Figure 1 (tube, rainbow, N blue to C red):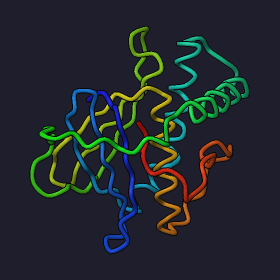
Figure 2 (cartoon, helix red, strand yellow):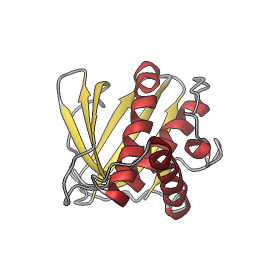
Figure 3 (tube, rainbow, N blue to C red):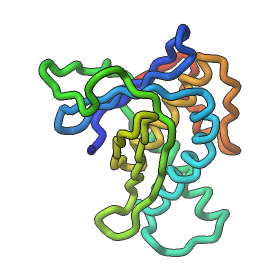
Figure 4 (cartoon, rainbow, N blue to C red):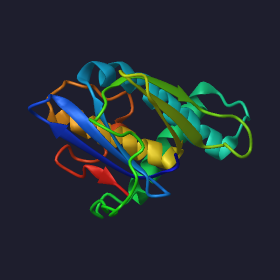
Length: 182
């Protein structure tokens, strides 16, 4: 699934995040994200997004840790400046849902940054639901930064106490700001 649109909303009665994903092809899916899962995912997602940004710029060229961190932070800030958080989500009529039935709860997430020229700057996210279904996303680094930002904002709305990683770019947008990305 090539990601086109992301919407994240905090649903207070469920005390969960509802993640809506729309593919380039118009296919859509929704997933519940629990606090426990997001707390476990937050650090690894930040690291994977950083690696994807570095791979987009430098490929497989080895960089010193400090240089890679600075490059990733700069790329994150640029991605957030260029992201479209202002356009409301488009609801396509007749779009097929990838997962039929009730909205599944995510039980496990696998992150990988593929290597190779074709995949440089991509992040692969596999969401495994508690009922055993998988949703795999291939996300450009810039969209992964937006996804991470929206998840952090949702956690803030829920009062989950999610602490941003060391750099401040994950908190660039205000907590009351956008809940979607086109």
